[in-house]
Length: 139
Length: 130
Image (cartoon, rainbow over all chains, first blue to last red; front, side):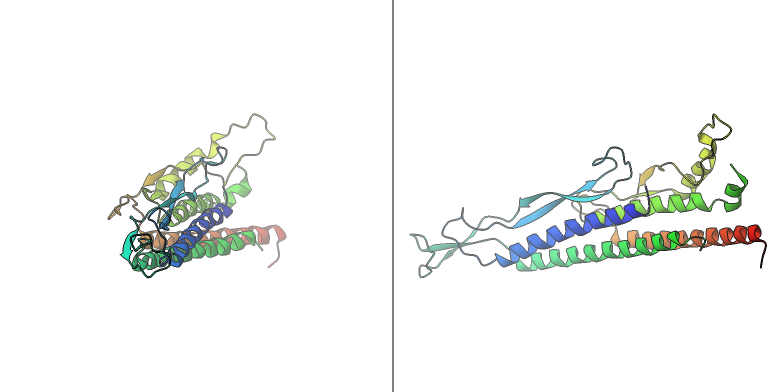
């Protein structure tokens, strides 16, 4: 239990939010990736966060808190079918398949993730200043 | 408890509790996007009272043992009563947590300043000058 735990906790949030930003970037990049069948179509992904509660990681340290990425799950609905016989990837019936990704939703998620990232950065900065002042106690 | 510990007053315990509260609040901020997470906080006044009372909880079995002060037990964290809960079960209000974090940091600095002044006073008393 120390001042530095705050930095560990906040940095766990930075790691988690970075994972979220990465999956969002992956989703956005693949929003227009076309495939010849629904199975081959890209599916939107999203990290599942889980809180690290007291003593879950290190049972000897009851103070450990924070957040971790439990797994990256596939969200997104079924692929959207589009009739486009001229497309080189069209199947025998003339259909191509596009992933079900909403750019607006992804953008909103991205804003939220970057806000959370900023909040944790600020927490780390405050903790750093307090720790520095504590170290110069009595000087 | 030795005289020098008494001279420092309650500030060491306050600082230790403030640091623990800061951990809880930063955990709330870190989990502002975690589904099902419930924001937690400590009742500071009750925790400080408890810390004061548990001062002499380590029995000194030898006269040369030094009493432990400035350390506190992990206070009981309680769930915050949320104004609203997100559909995914998350009860963290980021603005409230942010304000509480900043307030806690300021109060930590205030206690730090008090402790600093006391230490300087003791130093002056020992040296005898100025």
